[in-house]
Length: 216
Image (cartoon, rainbow, N blue to C red):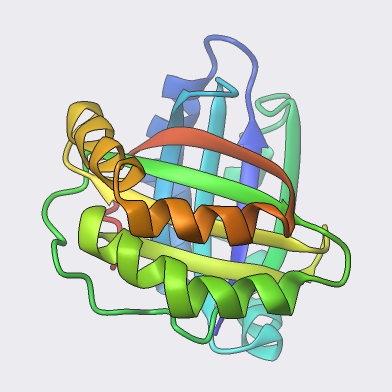
């Protein structure tokens, strides 16, 4: 599996109208052409006026085929024409699913907020970090956090990156679960090993749009 993570930045005040138009005109065309949306979110905390959406494909060839068919659809072209001057910036990156994703979530529950985390791994240490995390970090996080909806490593675009997404019923529940994890001695021991492999960490809190239910 690969994922296409797309990040769109809109001008202040432009987000509601764009999302409304996308729900009515854009998303139905993407469904028609078989694009599978893992989640479609707006930024709540972090870099504001942003939309982050994640699309899954079996491989790069399948992505190209489906997007080419969508791009030729007059309905999609009409939607794009209506977007002129609606966006400040667009970016995307293609990532691979980690060997352990998808995993069995012990506490799926409702998705009220998503912690979207991007880690820059030191050059040449991505495989080492992913292996360490899968063996030691993931079991601890699943025990405390419980609901992972994405864990990916860089493929096309920025390199040496890990992107992982954790869903919670609310911001308050996120704080509670992460506090318990931080207090766990096993997490502290893992953190000492993993931090030596990381160059940078960032996160954004997202909320799902009402018309697309996040998968996972």
